[in-house]
Image (cartoon, rainbow over all chains, first blue to last red; front, side, top):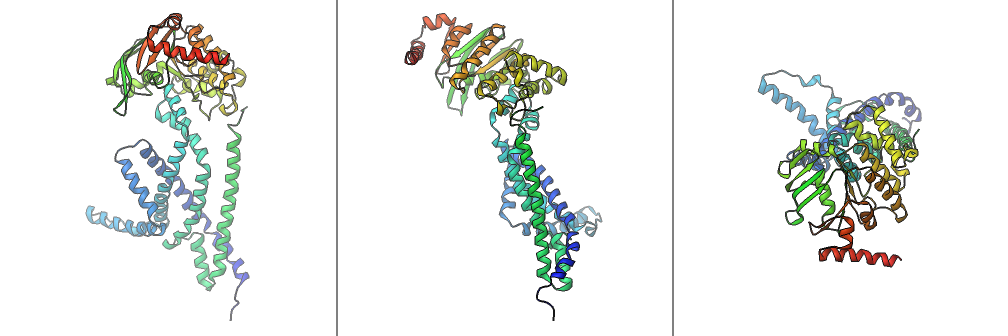
Length: 238
Length: 251
């Protein structure tokens, strides 16, 4: 008859669960940056009412926001192999789906998901910068491109910083769903360890604490960054 | 020299804001554009540097002429490198210091090197009395100081014309003077300027010509003394009278 709760086991398996951190961070960071690129494209399509692209963006954002992340993950997980088979059948190629690691599927799924949410956040951040500055940039002969890169986006990033940070924290925790595709991130590792000894509660406590710790560290970093940002532009340089 | 012929602009297909504007600003002249709110003054100004696109008419800036019907990307670029604008709400870049606000156009548009751009920018900041605030961000400047940086930014580009869009309307009353003083100083150096303003004293004392705009048309144009003392049109008389009345209240 085993113990009801085994603290020793809980501590023992921590190093193994920590091995999942690189995967967690990899998915979160890649999805965030790819999402930012997709979000920028989506935001500009919406702001500048680009025909076709704007409609595509609207459907994309609506679909991603209207369906659960786990469903999107499963859709991507099953869609890509089917896509590869279709390509193989049509072009007579012989690509082997098993060569693609599961984490790649998750990178794609999370990036697509992040892009939709970031489209709205980025759009709002850009629109928060007063139009007068853009007009002033035009009036001195700057192109839309330079005005965006040099004037609007640097300010939009600062305005949106709390929102983006919040989103990243959410994303970091959402990566736990990647275990469904057998990616050995924190949650995946916890499940493996738990299954080995049939001690699930202990393993999940570890997982929870590790996620919490990661978020605390990240929040600390963001606080420092925000402090740094608000210090500049208030007053004088040099 | 700036020449406008038959410039029209309609918003939303029904509100005609400019009903055929002819206007000439000679080289080195300061022309004050006065008139009540909604008469189309700002729209006219913004049609010159194509922040608004006029529907019809021709505009000549120096030796560059274009039709409203043939405005494309390269026309916009051409026009905007030949003009500069001073905005009611300053339009300073919040992520740039006073100096960087002035150098921005010199670096990005005129492709000058940083050393040269800094030197030019410091010269013009000095001219508007802002040399000691070169490294301040806009948030650390008063309204009057912001506008003086805005004027330095416009001057530094050495444009054919500077368009002033109610440069003192967003300022606290005690800050209006310092900005008007700078504009007066600039006007004395024969910079070509078109100034939309509600400061009648300024229009009378500083401008070489005054244009009175009403309901999308220029009703009266001429020497400030002439326009202010012997307005020909009934509308001009009414408008000026209201302003004179306002002054008696102040006294």
